[in-house]
Image (cartoon, chains in turn blue, green):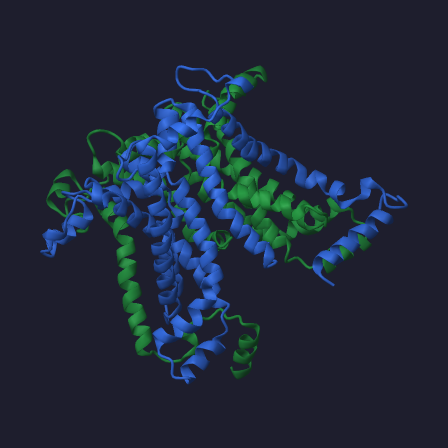
Length: 320
Length: 313
C-alpha cells in the first residue's frame, strides 16, 4: 500500500472512530479541516505577502502611479499603458537582451563549472570535505560582501586580476573589466558563476553519489577511458539534476540585483543593465511606480514561465 | 570488505568517494588533486585579495599588489577598527532581525508541512505547488506593494499605542526591525515548508499509526512525535534561513529609511553604504566586507553539513 493510501485510510478511520468519540464520517472530521489549524495560518501569511503582493503589483501596473500622479484604483483608470511604454523603451530592450544573455550563458557556464568541480572533488583521494567547503563558501556569502570583493578584484589599476597580469608580464591582458562596456556583462557573469558554481557542484555531487559504483567498474572493464566513461555513462544520468539546477539558476538571473547594485549603483548602463535592476531604478530611483510595477510583473511571469514546465515535469514523474 | 562493497552496490549508496573504491594512488588522483588545488586557489583569490588588503597600512597598500601579504612592519588593524565602528550597530540590527525571523519562518514551515503531508486530501499537491512557486518569486514582483503595505500598516503607531516605547530597552528603530522580521518570516515560510515537507515524507507512517492507536490526535502527534523528530531538520532550516536572511539586501533597501543603523539598517545596508562613497577607501571596505561576512562564515564552517542539506532542496 502506498504511503498516501495508508495515511488516508489511517485518518479516515480516525475520523470515524476518532478520539473525540464521534460516530460516522462528519465533515468536521475530514482531513482537510482537521489539519487546517496547521497549514492555514502559514498559508494565509505566505499567500498574503506573496500572491496578494503579486496581484497588487499587477493592479499598480495598470494605473498611472508615479512620483507626481497618485494611484487611482478605479476601473476606468486601468490600462496597459505601462506595458506599451515598455515595448517602446529602448532601455527595456537592452535590459531584456542582457537578462536573456545571463539567463542562458550564466546558467550554462555555471552548470559546466559546477559539474567539473563535482567530478574533480569526487575523484579526490583526500581532502574532499575541505574542497567541498571551499567551493560552496561563496554561496554562503552576501552579494554585498562579494560585490565589494569583486569590485576590488576588477579594479583596473590596482586590483588583484590586473596586478597578477602585470606581475607575470602579461599586462596586455589587463582590462578595465567593469568600465569597458563590452566586457562589463561578462565580468558580472564571471563573478556570479564564482558565487553559484558551488551550489551546482553540491547538487551534482549528491547526484553522483547515487550512481552505483558498478557502472564505473563495468566501464573500466570495458576499457572505457576516463573521459569516455563520464561522457557516455555518468553525465547522461545527471540530466535531472541539471534541469533542477538550471531552473534555480535561471530564476536567479531574473531577480539578480544586489551584486549589480553594490558594484554599479542603480544604473549599470545599457551594457549590463538587467531587468532586475531596471525595475528598482524605475520604481524607486525614478519614482515611476506603475512602470516599475509593470517590469515586476514581467519578471514574475517570466519566472512562472520557467517554473511551470519544470513543476509539471516533476509532477508527471511523481516527484512533486 | 567484499560484502560491504556488494551491499553498497545493491543499495547504490556510498559515502566514500569514487576514489576510495580504487585503492592506491593513481595518476587520476594526482591530476585531480592538482587541478582541484589550483581551482581552489583561484576561488580563494577574491577573499585573499580582500583580507590581505584589509591588513595593510596606506603605504603598503600603494606599494604592494593585492595578492602579496602585507610586508612585516606594515600590518595594521586600523581598517578593521574603522569598519567596525561604522558597522557594529548595524550588526546588532542584523542579528535582531535574523534570529527571530529564522525561528518564526521555521516553525510556520514545520506546521504547514505537517498539515500538508501528514494527512491526505485533494488539492494538497496544488497547494504545495503554490508554496514551491513562492520560493522562486522574484522580489521585484512584490517590492512596490511591500513598501505601500508597510506605509499603510504603521508599525510605529501600533507599538506606540501599545506603550512599547515606554519600555527601557525600546528604541525607535525597533519598528523598522519588527517590520523586517515580519517580512522575512512571511517570505521564508515557503522554503521552510518545502524543506520540512521533504523530511516529513520520509517519516515512517507506522509511527503515526502507532500514535493513532494510542489515541493521539493531530496536535498530540505533532507535539510528541513529529516535533522531536524534526530537530535535525530544524537545524538545517535554521542554518539555511540564518544565512538567507542575514545576507539579504533588497527588502532592507526598500523598507529602511536610509542606511543609518540607528534607523534599523542591517549590516548589508551599512556595508553597501560604506562601499558607495565617492572616494574609495579600499582597506576599510575590505575590512568591512569581512566583518559583515564573519557571522555567516562562522555558521558555515560550524554547520556546513546542514547548510549543504538545505541548499540541496
